[in-house]
Amino acid sequence: MCAVAHGDWLIFLDLARNRYQATALDEAPDLIACGPNEGALMAREKRWRSLLNEGLVSVVTRGHQPPPRRRIDHLSWRDLFLTITASVWASRIVKRGALLEAFCHLSERKARLAKRVPDVATAELVHSRFAAARIWIPVAYVCLFDSLALMHFLLARDVRADLVFGVRSRPFAAHCWVEVDGIILDDGGEACHSFAEIARV
Image (cartoon, rainbow, N blue to C red; front, side, top):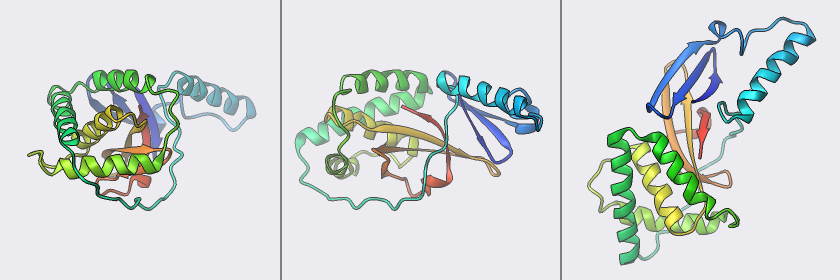
């Protein structure tokens, strides 16, 4: 379970059930509401810090940034094969609603690349190859499918990246994207900085 406060709502993402839920901040007194005295403020901070340390809530750190320029490189048969493999995996995850399984899988794959330093230039180059092969996949663009497939492709090419989920309240909206070292590779046509980060893998 992941959570983030946005506006006057506390929004939860249940990874096991692939479902969002929300509650008004004033209905979550143990996490949000507190008195004006210093002791109450410290108690509130301690509760949030505990949830943050357990990975159950996220801290919003995103600022505005323009999408990076992309270079389209030659498409190889390997790129096409890896894109098809990534798309089949992403499609299976989306159809089954197996978001928790995807998080575990991606975490394991990233752990194998733990010693690699994120390289934005390489990531943009690899992403351009994915984008060139993606046009041959007969599936309409959906942020979850494309972000999962892109993550799978990048990791197969030994590029460390983060899959980020964000939410907005009033009206509710959810979005996900892939970024490397804070640079968004595929924003899906959305202003990602307007979403509060709720989960990252």
